[in-house]
Image (cartoon, rainbow, N blue to C red; front, side, top):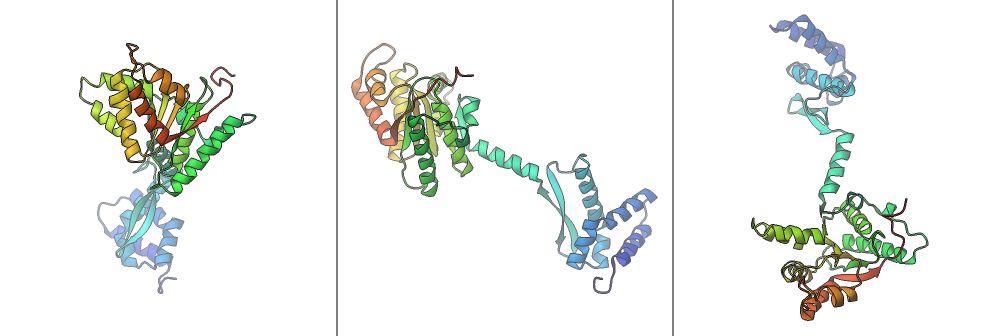
Length: 316
């Protein structure tokens, strides 16, 4: 009972309303009868104590709700794909609200996570890495790096406005340095932090090629301002003075001045990078002073960690 009115009474009222309107054929009347008998419709009317007049004026919305619900359950086309209908009480009438399905919510979460990680020439495997994928057995250095990564994520997400030094990972080819960076980036994404991962040799080429179309300034600005920045494969290729001073130097100077978390990976230790890579340009000319300035910023931004292990690219 609802204030002396039963569901049967309301059904009769709706049927009478439909019969009194012109243009309704028998098939539509049957559909409306079925819609009114829907358990969710009846439960909604009972819950909100909706009177006959509101039900009559809400007939079209009731029919839409039931039709869309059945289409969703049958896997048929929905009015709004990925969303499910819900009855709501709007003023004095029954209305419909569409909310995302669990599948849509999961897709939205997944997209949001991916959107928090911007990458330039980073391998797909690294972009999808997670802490649970990291193997540290029998490798003390890998355990040290892993623990440092976990500590960084916890400290930074707990105190996002305090400066937390990043990590400078170095070691042989293929031991998982980039993969570790990707795992850190994804863990940060899970906690709402945006990360930009850049394969630096590829970025250097992109910056050089973008000089002609005047887009290099925008690209450089986006990278240097990243919430968390990861520069992968530093020292892999000989770079020009311009890339060293006007690209890498500008990025590092901005991040040092603004105390922004920055990560690096390299096959070279910091000392090797300073003494045997950064001082030399493509003409083999040496400028130790410029290299020292770059390294001063790298050492400010990140703590050095050596990674050891087998070449995972060659393993089965």
